[in-house]
Image (cartoon, rainbow over all chains, first blue to last red):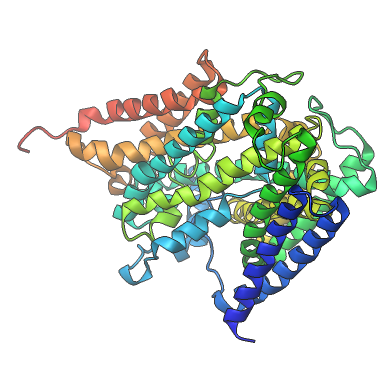
Length: 71
Length: 457
């Protein structure tokens, strides 16, 4: 599968996560449906985003002087 | 003592040897790389707690909007005008630049202090994650005013989570950091979704026409919870500003900005501040209001997002704790003779896990973040004074390096003196760092003024 395709599917999964919340907020689905849709879209995000990230990212070097951790 | 200190210095130097050289021009990164770095790093487990606490501290809706907009702007400007220029000029990490100014001995002490502070932060993240995992297990999250562990179940849970986090930090920090980057956009999405879906519960209409009324009366209604002091807009501005004090004013992010093509890249920090420290804080405030102001990140997120909620809380806690434990192990390795890094990380992780059992660490997170920045801030002032003020005043720089001092005693006096002064200030903890910073700048400069070269010399 092309790297770009993993990226596209990851983006669509994230959009699906957001959409699940939006359609619940607008009253089109019940809470249980929204939660299941969010769980499924989240799983898809992790699968595709991890695959895309694995193909596009070089192994990281050590992180500087150990003094940078964000809050 | 000199022998112990010189051993410490030598070990610290060898640990950070890979970062000793100045960044070369061909290693510089684009602005968008900084944008994505900041966006990924500033949506952390702490966001679930901080935003919720603003509600409990009686912030009003308008104070939140104004305070977070202004405070985060000040943070961005601090990165841009204080941290990035020094980093771009020197192309060094704080460790190697501070070493030239404060001496390797004082730098080693600073690094160890930093590591201890980070361990405490990691402990808070373990506790935050425990609120999520404890939910299905029926383990009650401690109450807002609890200091000591409240049940054997809570202790066992924090130990199990701590053990898991420490194991992952030992086995695979670098391998797992890729996965952590994947988590960040999704965690931010869960914040937004979580807030959106609980709005109807708070009475917000689908067309959002009454959102502001609900925000003022049911979310940020100005009412403080029991045991919490009242926050004004100034508390919010200052908290948002100093939340990452160690990174901008205290210059830890020299490690990032040494790769910047221009100091203006400091503005890319906005990509972290506004999503992470404004949007996520507002969202967690909405979520805590929807659960009756119960400070329980796991429960807040579960109510809002089902199973995805607690998963987000655990991942947010883990992605903050993982690099922290790794770097604490790296920094503390210098004080342990001949111990492999895994062993040091294990001991540091064990201490961190014990700390995480005490709910006060996470229930007083705002105060802890204030103290953490305050402790490191004076050395940022020392570096800034030496980098910019000394040349303007004709004071020679890098005396510690030129004269071979292991400890620049003037810097040490400024560090200790500033902290003493801050501890005595009769103002709220959130406001002390700024006068303390100015005091440190002035004191360090004054202690070196006698070294000024006469005009024309």
